[in-house]
Image 1 (tube, protein in one colour):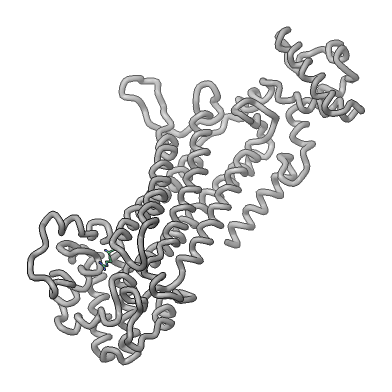
Image 2: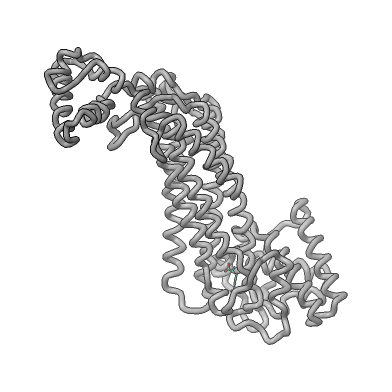
Length: 456
Ligand code: ARG
């Protein structure tokens, strides 16, 4: 039974009916829908818009419907959308009284409320999951404060750093993700019910009371805007897209690091997959999927942006397309955070391999130039001299570590302390500015990150 069938003389076409229906995907809003309806109905009773005893009866039956859905007794089917389903179910259980629930309300403000309720929970969970991931990263970083590895630029070895420094960079990204989700939350957390179809309602409703019952700190200030606004969903999708971008970058590194060429990391069997033909293979499929799924989350953001861009005020049915984007991004990000966290907890970092790798690729060249600069050579000249020294090494099969002092002296004012200066450990320990990789700096940064996530 359609909520709107009174005005129609013909049955709706079968294909049109299924085209129009959103129940297959919006049924996941059932709890939000019932929670919103209970608050609305309570308010209707309190304001004397419907009799108080009838309001109570409706609320009690809504609770019963909720538990029946949860136990599987009540199957969500045969309705246009979740709002119709709940109302039909209510009326089939308590008859005419149930028909009063929709007084002073439209599905337009109802669905806006439902998505906001859904997204509040979604954001809370994503923030929680992101915090868990950050904790894992901080834990690994804390046990690798002195694990030397090369820092890369252009994917070429650049300068020595530590695994702690590298992983804390991701922890910073994920902290910013939390900020973005919190920011989105403040725009999600506004109560739209009472906006009606588009111009509110003449009933003496109390929107503040509904907001209070549902824990919203404020109500939307314009009913036209309230029923046609999905900015808050876009905020969520944007925050999700950026979070996925971070996960994807990290995944790309894990994929590279687990290759035979790098061997910086070994993923546990429980987070790897094999090949159907090559018996030796252990593939980083989880991370490849995360990298791949980033595309669909970007797609969700583009989808809703595009859906919204041509919609005249106020509500238009185009907006029904918001839900699949939101659900898909939420499910995808949620799964990625869970799997990435589990994978990191079990991954083994190959410290020895990282240390060896740091000495290749002339990662101490900057230290050599700084060494000369500290002895009065202008840095630009020192840079050029060390450039020539590197060419000499390449031509003669040497490294900065295996050059003799004689050879060094041919290029500039070097003494035997150069060998200490070019050690990766020295390079790291001398970097003591805020944000630098030295042991003390990393202790400070990691404790600051821990403080941040315990506050948020
Ligand atoms: N299923 C609809 C949606 O998701 C609910 C609102 C329908 N409103 C309407 N006037 N047809 O947007």
